[in-house]
Length: 326
Image (cartoon, rainbow, N blue to C red; front, side, top):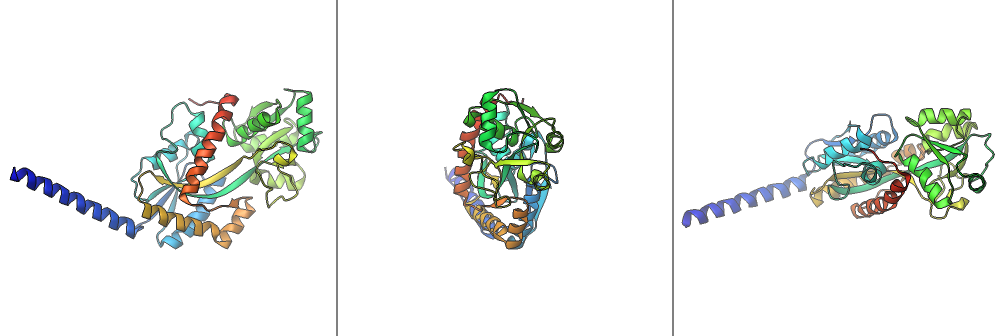
């Protein structure tokens, strides 16, 4: 009996030591470099935001924040790697609307749970999408476009960067709220889609505002409306789609940081403070503004609520669109 009690006391002592070490480790965070996984290829908008933020976070944390691109499966591979990482704050994710709102509805089998497997850190920035048309297209405003589509349902087509992308689903939301019908033509990326819209092969497109910016400024495209609830600071004269009569229309690409579920609160707080300081830095804000991004910087709780709202918004839209990936 005494031996059993001794073993039990030793086990409790070991557990207490481990708990104490864990608490000390969290309090001292970080003591080595942090890896920020970008679940897409280098060079895209998410990669750009990540590199700007990572550099400034490293200055605050006094440890390097290393960006690692791990693309594949629409962002699922990189996100899954973070979900399965040790919950110590040394592996974090630059998540997006795709990884945390669209993919759970698009993919039949998901390698992670967008809510249960992650600890929110901060919603960093939002990037508007934009509705553009060929400059020779008859519609010069959202109300004119809606009127044309209602008169001849199914006659006109819109391009996007691919099936199941935020841009495809921005078009589906437009159809749903506007009560209109148009054909979706998916492309393998925004580049080839823009070429065809500029050439007049397809009259309408939903695109990320940054990739259409130069074409709008040069007159090769006409912007009918931005997809966010408020006008984009980079194009203050372009109305929102909601202003054009589609009340409640609000879509955008967003970037946010997540850690694995179970990461200690002290670590989340340290990462949150560093991330929010990074996006508040004047140099970072200016570079993001050039990119048409609007800085947010939020609490972990606000990001968690944001993800829940985005999941609820996009699930029925994805279902109605018929888009699904095995």
